[in-house]
Image 1 (tube, rainbow, N blue to C red):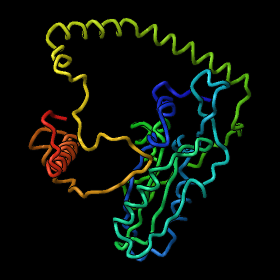
Image 2 (cartoon, one colour; image 1 turned 90 degrees about the vertical axis):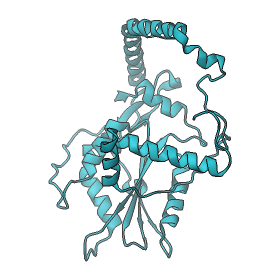
Image 3 (cartoon, helix red, strand yellow; image 1 turned 45 degrees about the vertical axis):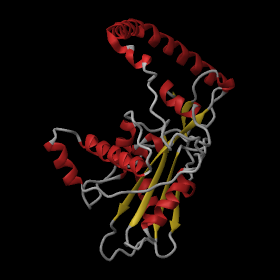
Image 4 (cartoon, rainbow, N blue to C red; image 1 turned 180 degrees about the horizontal axis):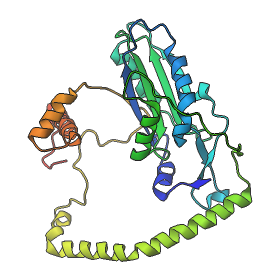
Length: 294
């Protein structure tokens, strides 16, 4: 039984139907030549063999009585893979636009908090002959480090899968711990958080002093010109709904890396430059490019 951190729990607290807090990814796979298997069934069998390598697959939430503290992660000993891994067959012609539309609809709905916070979708019927794999995982359950662990668990760097030791046998645990256990865990977590806050006071005071110093050195100009850290208004500044639209673009990885090397920038910098350039082009095409930088 492990408490969610304050940051991880915040993704649960802030979530609404209009603002889901899960992350998603879409992968396209070239199937082996003369492949005659069922990719969906093969994916399920593969996950069964490796799900013990990443805790995100087998942990789910247990809420505290009266929500006196953040929820805890507990083991789920009966993960229903038929629920978590689903198959969708695209109708003809099986275009990329059809796949993107499906992913947009799937990404619009919230994950079931009574189960482990992940879902996989396997698509067939693509005109390209490829198989598509869409993953949907709650941000409370997966950060950047956790995503790397999950990728290492499921994927291999060669066409020949590596041998993975089977899961160790362990005593099964109930999904919902007793109330007394939860209250004790809540008290321990509260004490631990208070102690971390006390330890962080010196750094907080130092940071506050730096902010005050910056304010007196001219940073107040951002307040005087009405900035307040807000982006200028664009056609995108509207109330959001739960509907999502998903689209893809293909970028040559070697070319992107070369651009980064020439300008001494990271691959992330290159991708951000592409995205910001595309956004600027779209705003300009609508006659809505703001005078102030976003």
